[in-house]
Image 1 (cartoon, each protein chain N blue to C red):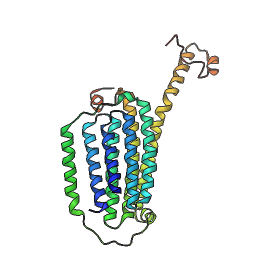
Image 2: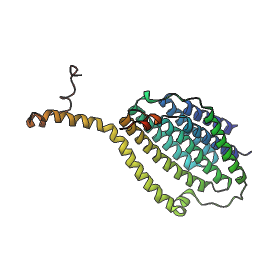
Image 3: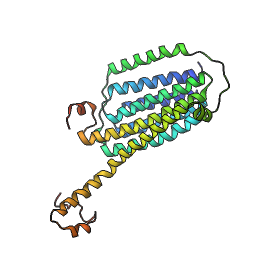
Image 4: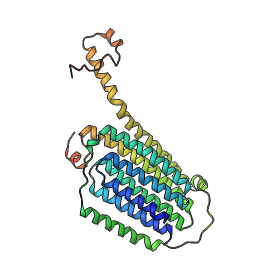
Length: 101
Length: 188
């Protein structure tokens, strides 16, 4: 097993950990953190796939797009979470779904 | 051995970020995941993306998360429930992705490749345009987050002015300052 295969397996485990967080966690900020972990797994997978095909620079270019989108998603998620907390008084997604404001 | 340590650190940080009770601790563990990710990427030869990952994820996103936590308060955190079904589904997802990925792992001949700058600016121009648009949207979102920091003070000043103008004392309104009209302890 080469280092690339080892890191690829790690990226898939990172995806699994983030997926578990999405399933279990109810706090909006923590859901954002779980999404960040999943995106890191996807980004590593892009770079490793580029390295396996001998095109690591193409993998870096695609990973940069992933980072840009991930950052914007984080900013929007944080803004939404703060707005929802001020509007409903809670960050729990289950409670916020049952409240009317 | 080097990769084993880095990967172990990355996975431990990710698990602690998901399982941590406090929001601030989860944020710091996420920063740890980003640091280990950047080091692994650098070791793999992806130097450009390692630096960008380190600056954006460890710097910008961590700071924004801390700002958001300071605005919503730490008491909003919840205790993650121990969910066996969640672990089971996550394992199923891991095996599905592994099953889809393993058949694709074939060694390809190394071909001469252009630099990152050439690929980014010349071969993937549509990506660049889309990223510029997305970053513009992100700036708008950041402004929305920052408005939440500035808005309480603006609302306080506006309410103070409304109370003062009820008596048609416009002359006094012109001499108002923020310090003069802080709520008295007796009123509170």
